[in-house]
Structures are given as C-alpha cells and as structure tokens.
Length: 259
Image (cartoon, rainbow, N blue to C red; front, side, top):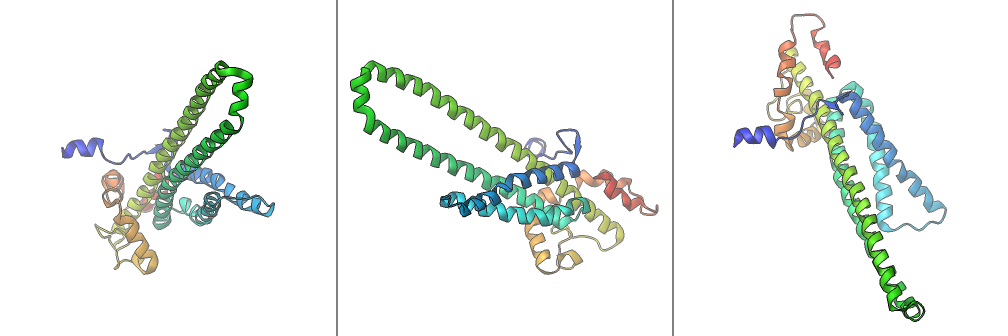
C-alpha cells in the first residue's frame, strides 16, 4: 500500500511547463497571466465612478483582485532571484487564489441561474395568457421544445469552459509549487554545504537559523508546516546534490543554471 501511495497518490511534480518551458520561465509566465486576469479588478472599481451599480459579490471580487495584484507586484521579482520565502509565498498564493477563484465562479454561476429562473418565471406570468390566445397550445409546446434544447447546450458549453479553465489552473498550481520546492530544496542544499545546516522539519525557517527570525520566519514555518512531506522531500534534489563538488570553485553556482 505504501508503494502504491508513493507512485500514484503523491502530489504531481512537473519538471517543465507543457514539457517545453523551464519551471522558472513557466512560473513567470503563469504569474504574468494572473496579473492580466486580476487587472480587471481595477477597471471594475473604476466603473463605480461612472455610476454603475455593483453587487456585493462583484465588489468583493474586484477588491480581492486588487489585493492579489499588490502581492504579485512584490513577489514576481523574486522568481528570478530564487528567494525561497517569496517563491514559497507565491506558490501558496496561487493555490489559495485557485480555490477562491473556483468559489467565485460557483457563486456567480448560481447567482446567474437564480436570476434567469426568476426572469423566466415573471415573463411567463405576464405574457403567458396572450401567447396562449394568439399562438395556441401547440405553439407553446414548440417554443418550449426549442427553448429546452438551446438552454442545456449553452449551459453545457459554459460548464465545459469552467471545468477546462479550472483544470488548467490546477496544473499551473502544480508548476508553481514545483518551482518553489526546487528553489527551497536547492537553497537548503547550499546551506548544508556552506555550514549552517537546516532543520529537517522546518527547513531554513527554523528559529535558530537566520531565515527563521521575526515574522518572516514565523510565516515561513507556517507555509512549510502544511504539506511538509512535499516541501521537505529532498529526493528530487539528491542527484543535484551529489553532482556538486564543494571543493571545486564555482560549483555552488549550478543553482542558477539548474532552475
């Protein structure tokens, strides 16, 4: 059972984006795509200035999008710098945003469905009698048949689009997670080679290490504590660590080239 779990139930660990783009470049592309997605929040709030009435759900979506934009602006530069804390924070932010985005999609879908049902019911009540008089019962049946065929097709297409976009977001989450794990593991390997060492449970964010000081260290320990078996699993970097010769000048520089 343990072997089955290791082989089939572990978190996917892609090594590239779509099998062509490196994890670093892929993470940058994914982050920029998220930036363009969240820019709509700025335009949504600007719509208030024109007198457009926003629902509470729409307003919360736009405010949340602006908050994500601010976080992205501070985290994206650290992708190339390969900062372990910031890359880990970016991965967690993308995971949480994917979940929240799914909840918002479901909320908007339910809101649209209930509003459409109410409008259809009101139209039927106001004009149903005149349609019966003018078109007859047979005409109503034909209209209902046509309407019943079109609406399910539109709903099915919308559902397929939502499911496809959600699956893509989940895949992107795995890519960003894989890059954050790669940066974290290689940073830990460098710390071991240079002398300070790392904690087996909390990595570089242990309280007695430089990266574990203050609130940043507390947040780092919190992020590592969820999914510790994934973040702290060093099997993917063992081959890289064995290839590094500590006595060879410039050997530690392979960190940048490997990512």
